[in-house]
Image 1 (cartoon, rainbow, N blue to C red):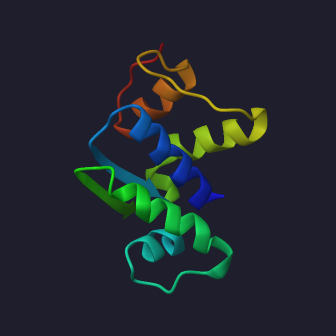
Image 2: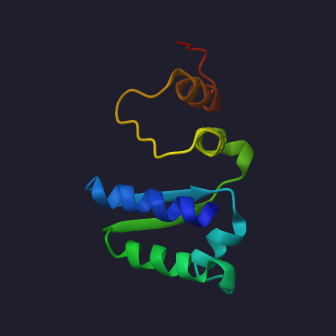
Length: 112
């Protein structure tokens, strides 16, 4: 599911016209496969192939491993989408709970 989420996010970034991308994931295995450090698992081979093709759409694209405790917002968003389903995009106005998580990640006491 992590690889699928990365692929979907990258396709949205291409459609949005972004040229520089940093992809963070708490899946060390997926990140190492994308960086060529681990052999690609057959279960995600097609998805990894798609992701590597999408990389060419960006001027700059890197894949970074970020432990879950350092990436609370992404984890909460993934849990939200798993729970309610569908495709969700937020341009300038994010739900309050996302702002609160991001603020806590940088130790801000601002709450909406």
